[in-house]
Amino acid sequence: MTGKIAGLTILVSALIAGVAMYYLQVYAFYDEVTPTGVDDVQITTLQGVQEVILYEDFQAIDADSSPIRYRACFTTQTPLSTLLATYEAYPGAAPRTAPGWFDCFDAEALGEEIRSGRAHVFTGQRNLEFGIDRVVAITDDGRGYIWHEVNDCGDKAYDGSPLGEDCPQPDNGGS
Image (cartoon, rainbow, N blue to C red; front, side, top):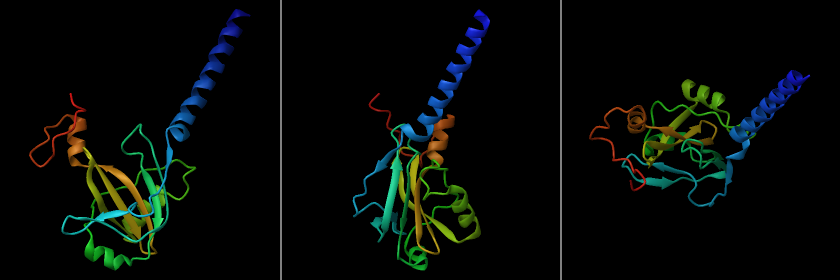
């Protein structure tokens, strides 16, 4: 009888821990970002200057637990041809999956649109935080998406490789 109680206790504890971990990963750490309505969508020009583009329907989520949890969606009336002629492309970006409840951001569908050329990715801001770039993708029909990418300097810092001269020095929090 004691073995059954111990087994049941372990099983219930494991179930509670599993549900708690799922909730923490998918819901607990994310906060809805309150849009300013003025400068939520910025893209870097070919001259290296950040500019705000016209946008509507902005919604975003973020979390303090990781610099790459930011996701945003918006729409824009600016033609993609104008954006391509004005703003810096960001090659090699791949959208990161958002929690299922943030349903405007479908990373798999967006990734397919990028691969097929129906969406283009632009530099939002380089080194928003050391090793992290903000990128903006816009589709042919004016849907826009924003997420954070680990850049080359971030990859080197995280795997322990020498940073090189083209990387800014990381902020070690004053240590």
